[in-house]
Image (cartoon, rainbow, N blue to C red; front, side, top):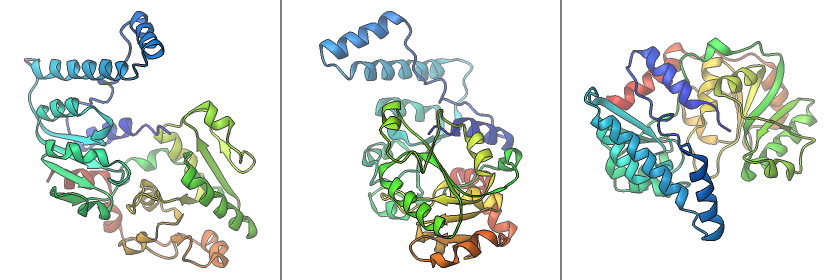
Length: 319
């Protein structure tokens, strides 16, 4: 699901006071003509050339970066922040980092899940990961930094009138756990709404559990996702089996003072953890779920909450 993170990064970074050149939109590839799009289809169909479009994208993006580098009015930036560099061609990233004095990589998906990212690390001045296990995956000087909440979250929340929800993109390794949680909550008369987005119509139509899940017909923006989840008192988080780092849901719930049900037991080691606010599925007693959901959120010290803001996160990244 595309939650519109690019927009949120841009908005919040500008609000903090930085002057920002956002490359996400500039590097988004579009066929310059229908003829080239047709030619790509021919190469793919007749010559089994599945890499032709990738070469077009790489060359297009390199051209965009080169134009910025050669612009006589461009002043080299203080910092370049690149998240998930492995989503881009190596040659493109090697040129992007030249646009700034200090280049920072933040890998918010586990290295075990996307091991190719290690091939990009030598390009960066600083490397950060959100999963403690990744500190020991390579010989590079890697630092640990958690995820965060965006500072302006409160501006688009709504009144919480419903009980429990999960919002996310469909993943096979999560649906079993979600349905298990739903079954247990139902035993205690707790309503659990699951909202899933699918990467394709084929994937959505072949999904078996439509009676238990709300299928999103279109992707939500990040603001829409927060707006929808804010209608619920409790948010469910399901850990990706490839890493132990905490998802954004934990920090959003911290900021919005919402409770969270999670299967990521590592949350108990964080300074904001309180058993009244966090229920660890698989460890805590399910018989206490009704009490957990219906009791009030236990207030957290403001300094601890502020520690996980985007503004502090960005400061830590650039120090």
